Amino acid sequence: MCGIAGYIGNSKEAGLQFANRASRLLQHRGPDDSGIYNDEQITLLHRRLSILELSALGHQPMDSSCGRYSLVFNGEIYNHLALRKQFLPGYPFKGHSDTETIIELFRLQQEGMLKEMVGMWALLIWDRQEKRLFVSRDRYGQKPIYVRKTNGTWLLASELKPLIAENEQPAYDSTELAEYLALGNYGHLGIHTFFKDILHFPQGSYAWMKPGDEKLDCKTYWKLPDIKAKDKIPFDKKAEKELHDRIVEGVLSQTLADVPIGITLSGGIDSSIIAGILSTYYDKEIHIFTAQSPNTKYDETKYVDAVINKFGKNNFIVHNKNLHELSIKSDLAKYINIQEEPFGDPSIMGHGFLMNMAAEANIKVILNGQGADELFFGYNNMAQAILLQQFKSMQFGKFYENLVAMKLGKNYMLRTLLKSFAPGTETKLRARSRIQRRGIISPGLLTNVDDSLIEQYKYDSIYDVWRESIYGVHLPHLVHYDDRNGMACSIEGRMPFLDHRIAEYVATIRPEDFLKHGMRKYILRESCKQYLPDLVYNRTDKIGFYTPLVDALTRDQDWVKAQIADRHLLRDEYQQLLFSKLAGKTLTVPEATQLWRSLSANVWMSEFNVSSNQPLR
Image (cartoon, rainbow, N blue to C red; front, side, top):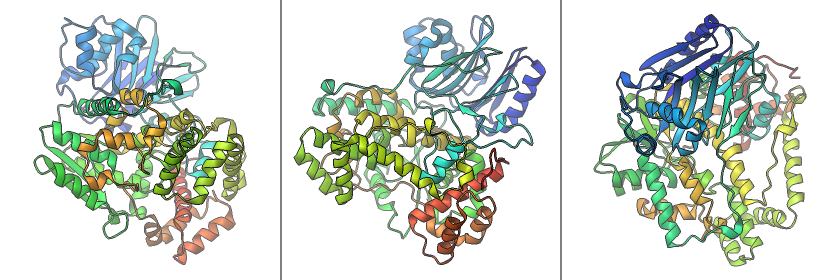
């Protein structure tokens, strides 16, 4: 895990200046080593966090043996040793880093290597002969890379700060900001960021870039598999074993490291499975990092304890954090700077606390359970899509059993039926609701909103619901905050469930099998039942690292009001209503969430000196 940056232009001096500044700003991503390649048209920067091959043999930029290519790389390729055996037998490797594997494989296969790699990455490879830069990002976008074109020059970096000039007042993206304030959605608009002129390089893609190129021409090398319904298989014992084996392989492959590893454990199904697999097959010490809200209904300590009691007495070392220690006033600006964007709720700060604990324990690699909800239809709207599938296929018994067991209520059932009988109407109603919920926002902010950027997924399509979760409203911001919080502490975050081989198998299983007896992610529970205490296996709720938002806002209410008062992102009358309820301690959780979004956006605009590219009022 590292930090990278690139300059494509026509000034060797300007490229070096950019790289030197980026090196300072990205030092936390790679405190162990740094290197710069500087030529007339290209400058590449690498900041190294040493995880594999701790010696100088892992130094970057790294040149290919033929001398034609130079690479800077951020990430991990978990199957790189297997790739050496398959494609480079007999090659005299100098060390055992995945960086050396990549550059030599690229020498042979160019972009063809991408489909062979298992892992996460953002990489830049300069071709000295053709004078062009190869850029690629992993399938799910776990590793970031941002792109900005300014004055005919292309700038790329692992984080946003190097792409924002000293003393610049960057403009905000109206659509991204409006979507966040109204709905809490962010990271779902493809290549767009909260900054108007800075773009994400898209996940699962690559591009060749040359000096003077007018636009970025990205090509997709992988996307979620879309298997026809007639070709899907039932979740029988054979499928259960295959899925089990792929998950175990995914987890164990991500223990590849020359440094100690740890995991975060919430007490939910996903992180508990990872803990159980590691305890079963991994014979080294495992540091467990958890954070709870004691004496509240959201306290998951009993679930964490159940996992530890079942598996962890031999090789678990447990570190715990009390989330009541969280202070918005003290910590929000810090985490806005780390995240470089507004974010969904204080649980992201709670995750940051875990990374701080890991850093204090000298752990450089952390595995977590993120991605399982997205892959296995673990969210409410995804479960609703499966209910719809069961209803449409006339499995009325399963439909009714799940609906009752999940205790979702009549309104939920009516929405499911509406999606079944009138999917077009449901889609229109959802689009209308999206617009109506913007009514709380100051009209000036909505002036330049571009609704064409918002993909309206069809909830009567299982594949669309899956795609929305992976590419839209869920996974993009999860991988973002995991990367930022980890790298702020010089820690590499890994997500075993995002091994693409798992998704490629999950896609072959009948969707109606994902929900049974009211249990979401049923096929995951059953495949990995041996790693779950009964108490965790039978859970039907979902909490995660809950943070007491209403209490936190109330405790720091004077500071909260001061941060929000002047910029008027929300309509004045609605903002005053929230302030009144905050003072009277009658704030509901949805209202507290709305107040949080306004607060987070205001602090972001202050911390990054964001200017208005149109009037706010």
